[in-house]
Length: 270
Image (cartoon, rainbow, N blue to C red; front, side, top):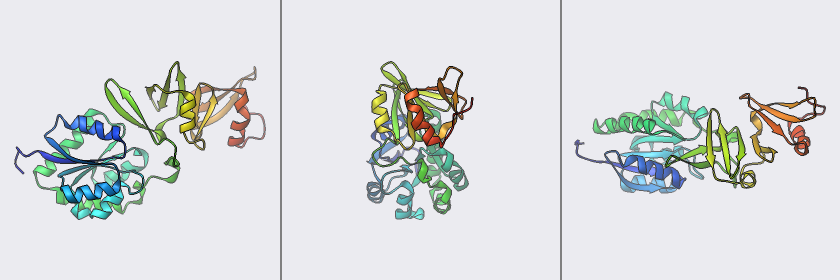
């Protein structure tokens, strides 16, 4: 392709805000967005009808996933593809082995630019065909499939959109260690990062899977599998210690339910 030709891009993601972020970032690149799709079926149709040069393809979508899209189109017929995933812990090894590029939500501007530039070079060198073998390797690697325990059950949040300095970031619920109240806002604590959203704790409690998250205090919701220990001090007050080392107060009226989940039949030890 000539240097003057704009790269024809298709955006595939079931989250409108995620597509909008990609659209905003692409404005600063030699790209033309030729279409958008919000599910796997629409993505298959768009790839066949629009013949894009490059596809940003969400891995996890309701119904047909991004990998299902590749299977349907055929790895040998796919355009250059940048996968977008929220499940870095399970996907990165497989993507690395397949020598494909990917973006882990939430990704920053620099990471996007790196992925786009790599795809642009492949397209300009007309070397996209080399990726078909990598796609086949990826499809054959079962490790890329997201384990069932990381998927939110139907009806509950899987991702939370966070606005930061004029940009919208998508935070996967699976990355959240705990949520704490801060006035009219809620703080999402994910590893070393904290994201602030304008949302009531009651609303979040109702929209988070109760099999995964537990409200230990009126101002705190904890991801259950992040709990390392239940503590009680000399004054009879309770707290949970997370695997990250964070220590959070537990209301006494929530202790019994928490102990039941932890399989405790006797008083916790400090």
